[in-house]
Image (tube, rainbow, N blue to C red; front, top):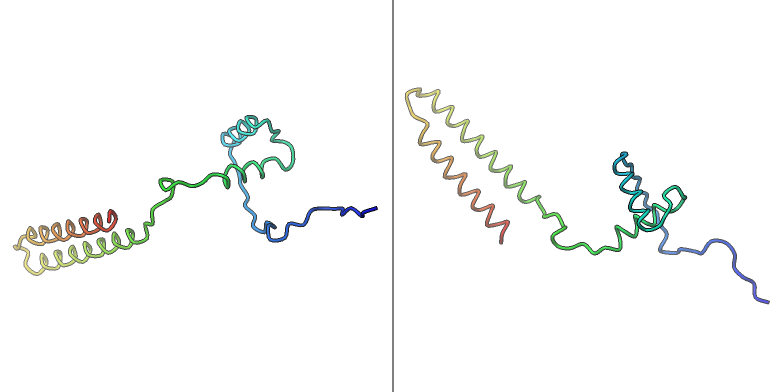
Length: 128
C-alpha cells in the first residue's frame, strides 16, 4: 500500500513573504461586506477576505488609462520655473531699490515671456 503524504502542500517559489495590512472605516467595511455577499461569502469566516481581495486585485489587467503618468520630469521642470521666477522677482526688487523711479514693466514682460516659453516647452515634452 502507498504511503500518502500528509500535511500542508509545499509552496516552493510561490510562498508569500510580503504582508499588507488594510484598515477600513465603517463605510468601507460595509462596502466590503456587500462585495463579499455578492460572492456568497461570509466576511466573518477566517481566510475569506484575503483570497477575495487577492483575486480582485491581481486577476485584473491594468489598462493604460489606469496607470499614473511619470510626473518626475514635470515636477523637476515646474521647480526650475519657480526658481527662475524667484530670481526674476529678486532682480526686479533689486533694480527697483537702486532706482525707485524706474518702472518694472519691462522686467515683468520679460518674466512673462520666459514663463510662456517654459510652459510651451513643458507641454511639448509631455505630449511628445
